[in-house]
Image 1 (cartoon, rainbow, N blue to C red):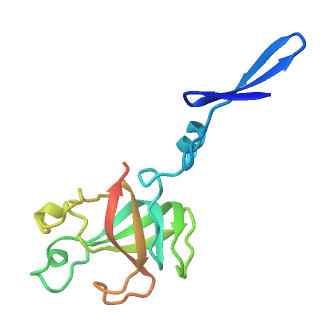
Image 2 (cartoon, rainbow, N blue to C red):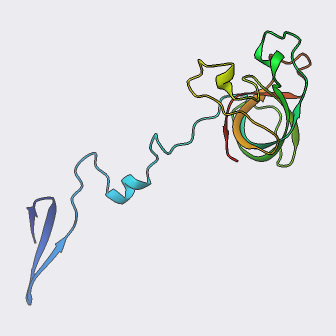
Image 3 (cartoon, rainbow, N blue to C red):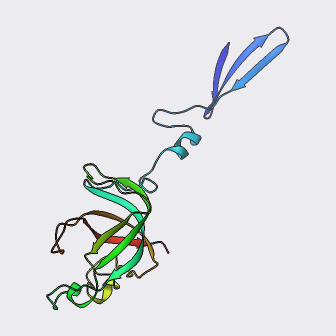
Length: 166
């Protein structure tokens, strides 16, 4: 048997009584994977973002905007609503140590730190402006237990950023 290499495809040549049989196979250089395998590997662009510890990623629908304003009228949440009742549409995942699993269809109280109004009005410094949310909107967000902004935090969740889906 003879092995010859022409470019990147080696040929294995076997001489038999009836003639010569050539079998060509692709050569993979060290560190290179076959194209099919390269395409199936996750890349930084298609890999889902990690969910922070203590957080839950979900899709939810705003079913009520609560009219309650903060007592300090000099803050954005003292001027426009920041609280809503959200119906969980779909739970997309949990970060480690998220202590209260949520279910589709469950209604939860959520505090939106950058208000339910478009963020450009009160927070022009945000690099990713938020469009605002109203009743009927479906959004995706990472949320965790409310730790500030709400006087009675028991049972509340908080959101800093979201993406409107519908």
